[in-house]
Image (cartoon, rainbow, N blue to C red; front, side, top):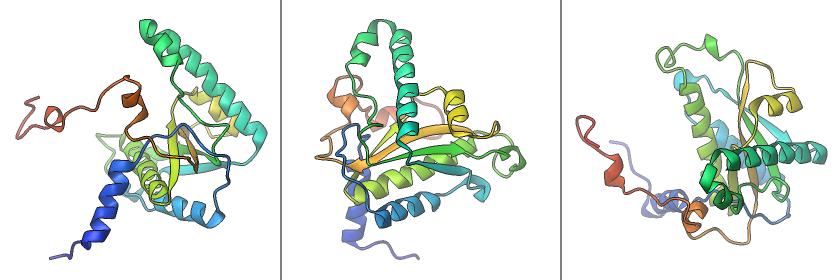
Length: 213
């Protein structure tokens, strides 16, 4: 039987999971290169269906590109507020991104040519996205362990980002990831603090031997 982690190691894993936050407020301090490398390696060691490793990461170091991405996000923020109808005003009061403030900005994308990977995707082709999500979660947990914040921004027009960064037609950007030092981590998820939604009870998401929800 495989040996479990020690009590201290196990506690650290659960601490990272429970104290991870989707951060929107960052300090301008840069991230040390060796830490960034550790974070990227953590992402790259994520599980993937059929070991296809569909993640492709673009590091944004050009200030002009960062500004252009922020403008794309702002355009979608306004469109989202309009689509939300009566909740639009409440949405506009939320801080939904930190692209201009974060120390590092990464664009996580699905690779092109994914149709060649059939293993695990024949009936569930979206498993490529699930695999990329695992890479993002690895990065998130590693960042928290390093004392760094990360925010996942999904408010953007896919084709606009694709054109801006020269992403091939078969590939797809799925996340703008803001990484950086933070003054403090939110004590609970920001959207929960702001009253947008509350965390569901586990029992409302769990059933046994069939759909009993």
